[in-house]
Length: 111
Image 1: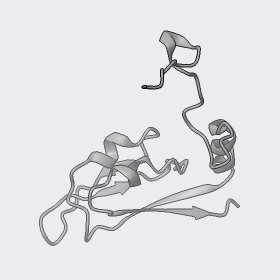
Image 2: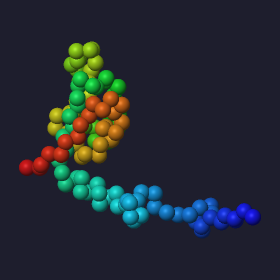
Image 3: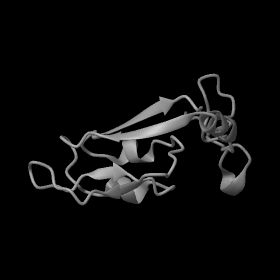
Image 4: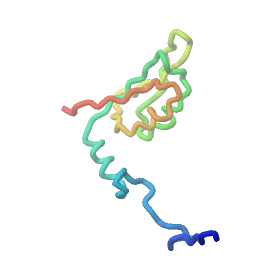
């Protein structure tokens, strides 16, 4: 005899649970975590020997911290570079989208 399945109450019969959780199954407070990150200064470092100039990091950066360099590397590629005077917030979107692992995000102590 097969057991019957009844979904928990919720929208369209599905159970409602928080999507982002930590290991203790408590709701993950993204705003609190992001505010902790905002307390630190961050610096983006592009490893030009690995960058192939795909511009994915430039498109992913919400703050516009990155731009493409006008200078060519040894292999004829225009690598990404940080824009002068624009502060990185440490969201790591550029790091996550880079297919060549050519980006490092460093925490820097604020003066």
